Length: 109
Image 1 (cartoon, one colour):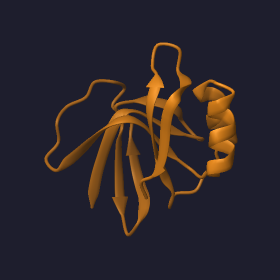
Image 2: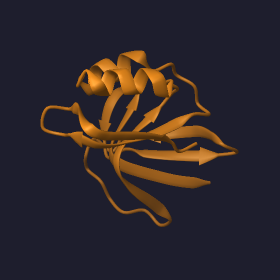
Image 3: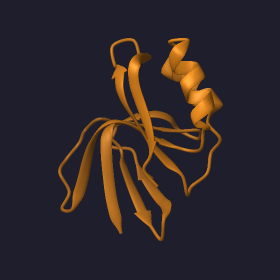
Image 4: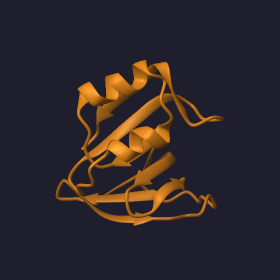
């Protein structure tokens, strides 16, 4: 089982979680552990800078939202939950939780 973490994780069910741990097995999200920002190192934990998003979005929609400099909240509203799809959103304005011109999103799982 792989364990991943990032600055934040977004899920439709729980919203935005700070430094949560995502457990992946058989190419599906099995568990999301909300550390409530009280993060402790775990053996084998992989860290990524950005926001993991559990769900699906089209690249066309992402590019439209990025061009319009939308907030991350607007991006999250377009996500469709699926446990076998995880994206990593990078290069965002964390202070305002807003997409920037150089924001990137790529399928992680």
